[in-house]
Length: 182
Length: 193
Length: 215
Image (cartoon, rainbow over the protein chains, first blue to last red):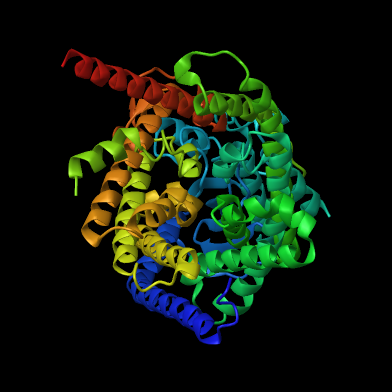
């Protein structure tokens, strides 16, 4: 590069790049200020819906002593707890809500977000008969659950044993956490 | 310890960056005609991925979070990666000319390798700490290297095979890659918990 | 400016996916349902048009040495805008595409068009180029999606049609080969689609040659 020693030229390069970055940053700040409240509201709504789905009447967030690192939040309601857990799925972390009553039985599970494969792992969260059936079998379970392949009683989703195991992990963590709360 | 071993095994085998997660397909198809160039690319990518994981973790933790500008992460990360690639290129050129000669042509390509940006974004998403991020980057790079070297050795032979005209070149290469991915599916149950 | 030629190039003879093999990561990773394919295609099209227009407008201002860094910053900006809007207004799509939305930044097609076309041509032509290449990308993606979804899950229109958005079941349950929606299937299906497009191009070329010979 013959212009390497030319300070002015290098300065011009740096300033142009800086200007572009600054404009991009400013534009993004603008867009972010519009979308952030919407995204936050959506997330809050989704969490509320998931709590309602697994814990009739909803609940208030309470403190908990984490027995497992995948338990992120606990909500206490009239009939039990709604425990938000984040087990590691096939692709990335699955965020789900597990309802547990005061007797330590699962009231229901609801998946808030996931990135599992469409048609396979994603069945676990789908509003289809197969998805309902998969989630339904957890209702009333207590102690610890596992898929049939691991000697448990839960039928895994066809072709998605890892996702099914992850859901079991989540349910187990929620049950264990609820047990410590009484 | 378990977490560390788990990440290494996942990144190299059961969650291989190329064959399972589909990051970095462009260089995978582009630079896999010969085994030695594939190895060179793999090494360069591994190096940059580990370095980028470290740098981006620092940027995220000490710049984006305190400034409340997490939405700038994609822009910030790609700039960091581009600069790292540039610096590595200049450093090698001056200090280790032999290595530069071997890797030089691949370096600019790494900026647009989605494996690098991918691993950085996944690190942030999964909330890994500094050590785990770097480890995930390095192991992901090794996974990339394993896959691309294996594929290059398959391809050297496949290219000599006779096949219908329409399948010549990339279509056949993709199908070979598919069979390799099928083999890697065998690792999918492998996990340390 | 030749709109028809640009369109044909984007769709077939210089299709970003089947001929140039650009943006392969997303082509393989997210093509498991029609919804994903259309969503990803549209997102990439919009980003390519926007970045093409801006880069073309700035092509005389950006110094040559830092052009790639400048392009990538601009592209990353547009990608983030699209990402934020999707998260806010089409959360289902944002969730199902996941990390592959920010990864559009390194989709070589967007940067490729910036470098190969927008940096040398006017604003309007660049916009048209972005549109044509984007359409070509979307069409290729949708074809791969439809095949993978049909063979892998036995459905059509997953995420869009049918009960609960699970798609319309065409092949009854035990028969679809679920491997097709797994990574293996991505490589295999794309391989066959590529072979198909090579055959089609050869076929068209022969036809036009015959025509010329007849003249």
